[in-house]
Length: 160
Image 1 (cartoon, rainbow, N blue to C red):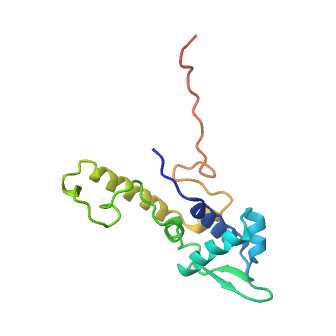
Image 2 (cartoon, rainbow, N blue to C red):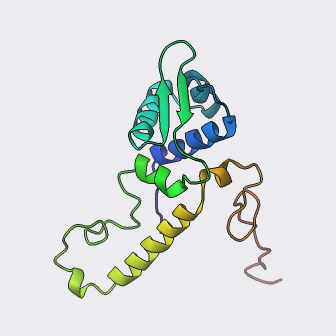
């Protein structure tokens, strides 16, 4: 199974982390964020506009202009950022999960499974703050640095 977060969502997280790590009271220029994150300025402008409309960043114009966080990094979550950037973070295309009407919902045997999975994903996204993501020592909930999955030593398929 694959749940895909779009490029826009991934870039939005990167930009928010970048702004959180800058710890600057001066606005960070668009070109500087674009260069550091290797995102085109035009695409970055669209992402920052979306984040601004969600109240997560604020921009200033003119000399010395740029972008600042408009949210508290200790309170802002990955879930808020992704919801602002993505059309949906649904695990499956299901009208019943997205608040729409589905004629099959009452008899759908898999709907409880999808609802539970969706809730667990949203709970996780809402449990990770921007401060945690911006910290160099960020660890996932099971304590692996940077959220890295440590490969297990697996025995060969056919023992010799």
